[in-house]
Image (tube, rainbow, N blue to C red; front, top):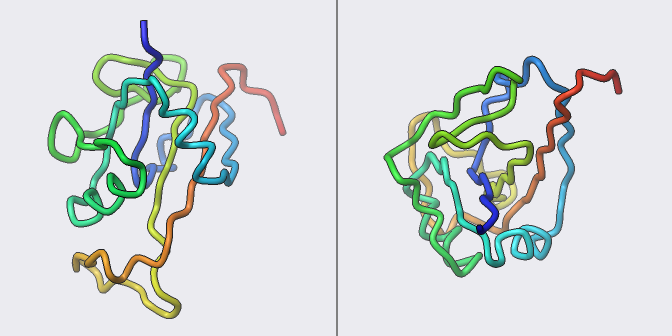
Amino acid sequence: MKKKILIGNSFPFSLVRNARMVAEPQPLAALMGALADADVVSFWGHANTLAAAEEELGRSLKPRTERPAITLSPEGLPMLGGCEFDTCWLLSPDYQEGFRPPAGAEVVPEQIAGWQVLKLTWNKSRKEI
C-alpha cells in the first residue's frame, strides 16, 4: 500500500488543538522525496497557484473536491478524505519583493518568485516543548 501525503498551500493553525505540532522549513527536494511513490491527498485552496505548484513539483496537486476542508480526528490530528495524518506538507509561493496580493485578488504565476516548504508534524502525546 502506498503512503499518503497530505499537502496544501496553507494550513489553518486554529486546528492545532489537542496535539503538539512542530513546523520546520524544508528544502523543495525534501518535499519531492516525500512525494515519490506516494498518493497525494491535497487540500490546495487557491486555483490560481495550483498550476504553477504542479509545474514546480512535476505532479498533480489537484484536490478531489474544490477547496476541501480539513477536520480533526478525535486525537486532534488533521483528517481529510477519511484519512488521519501526523504530517502535512505546505508549499507556499514567495512573491516578488514588496508584493502582497490585494485582499480577494488572485495572483498570476509571473508574480511568484519561488516556493517555501514547511513540514508540519504532530505528536499525539501532548508534551510540552
